[in-house]
Image 1 (cartoon, protein in one colour):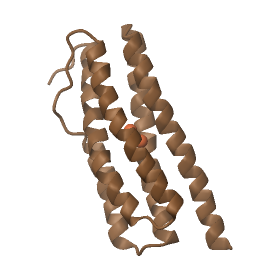
Image 2 (cartoon, rainbow, N blue to C red):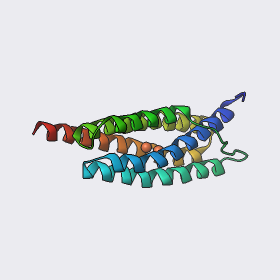
Image 3 (cartoon, rainbow, N blue to C red):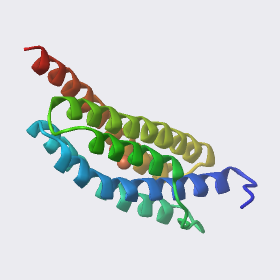
Image 4 (cartoon, rainbow, N blue to C red):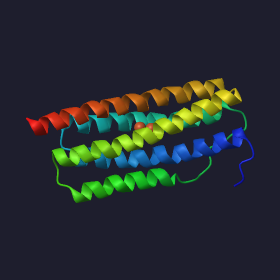
Length: 163
Ligand SMILES: [Fe+2]
Ligand SMILES: [Fe+2]
């Protein structure tokens, strides 16, 4: 597909993000099952709920702009990040070491999403899609707060091992 302008780039990124978020809704339950620390399990479950809302938000973003539709395509970057997380689960036993790895894998996903939603917000603004920008900014906020929460849990996990 040839991308000719910022609007087409926006649709492309929106479609990629839709694929990424859907993949994450399938990965988070597995991560919750694999985690040991109850707070980490809760964090994954809570973010699963948020992520389901984020998928719905992407539809609202598309509906808020005339003549655009989310296309079916696969986000290969997210597929690889999730596969890496899966391999980590297979390579570890339940406990603090796996939890540390899971937090790292989850933070890679959040950072990817923060970059993605940051770009989408900028493009929406540039294109004058104000409602779309506001909806995307809500998700960006959730991704950032998830990342912060994971940083806190990582610090607690390290302290637990030290103690
Ligand atoms: Fe997300
Ligand atoms: Fe996320």
